[in-house]
Length: 189
Image (tube, rainbow, N blue to C red; front, side, top):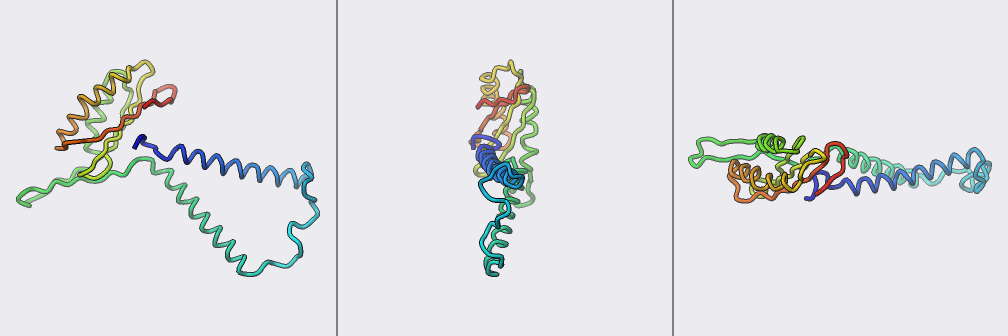
């Protein structure tokens, strides 16, 4: 996982392509309707004959439109879910007298505060995704334009992550750090 927003490039490309196709089709229809483009006679029917197609064709077109609409709605709803899925971690006691539940967002809150206090860091957003057996830490750091990103990354790796690993009793915690500059919006990995 290289980014907190992994499908962004594909989504932007597909949205741009679909948008261009729809714009071209709309421009073609408008210019043909007003007679600016004379590739098709405005008075001539689009299809030969005046009778309706067979009923099954109408059903297939309607079903295809519904399926396509549902696909686009699911794609649109996926755009709102930009963060990786987190979970609640559970530690069972040895004697089975109780258990401890910890939301992943609560577990990374002190880490976010610590990283947000580093020199040159404006804010930090962390997501602890995956299961308790295979966690992944994704960190997005918004840095000042003059910040030393190497020093910030080194401090995250040597100070912040080891403390988080110790607090969560983890041997390993794969970490991805993504930097964004506060003023420009440019990203560096």
